[in-house]
Image (cartoon, rainbow, N blue to C red; front, side):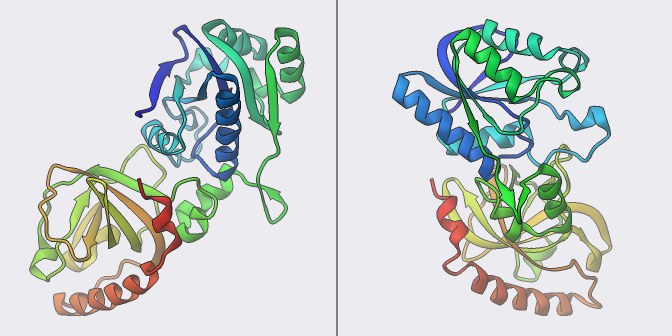
Length: 312
């Protein structure tokens, strides 16, 4: 069932259990919140929901772009089996809303039966609201509150800052160990210069999403989802220096596939970065390297754990 998208500014009368947080991406700690929400919803006959921003709040603070767009999060949360996502637009008005005002608006527009948050959750103007305030509010209004301990990495809280550092360094193997769904890019396949076709490596090309934090350039072992079927593949993220092409693209060579996918939407899941993008002296040298890349990446993808996570 397709996930339902609701507007934070509009009333919705069905009872819900809701997860609150920033949700720049959906990591394993967030997945625990979702599972907690789903359990309460199932046990109490209500709908499961999550509140997230429909735009990127980082723009207001001059920080790095988001790891996942709103649409990316919808895709992940649908895979996790959530009933609905409530989208809130981050703007000056939202930013200046007091903690009390935020909670009053949430409970005024939605019939909230349960709230699930991480142990370090803050909210409202200047992050003035915290879990203690939320406990008092929920107790007064008869709302169940579940506070979930946050995920840790080497004794430290699993943070968006840390995950962003993995995106910027291309460490997708490590990144995936912390994500609910392996890191992915999606888009409609575009026509390109067909240089790969001439070398025997035809590629599926999608444009990088300018709203997301850029993944480090490089060659990656990937899986490609085409109309629900998963194929092994390798992907070049970045420029094509051997052809003196400075445009940045995401080009995926799909193993054992020769279908026409132009104009179709594909999803590319990233498994491991294998090398830098390199300028070769000749096209023949590049072709030789691509043959080595394919052998190496086929080995990486064999019995790869990520494959099971992206089925369905």
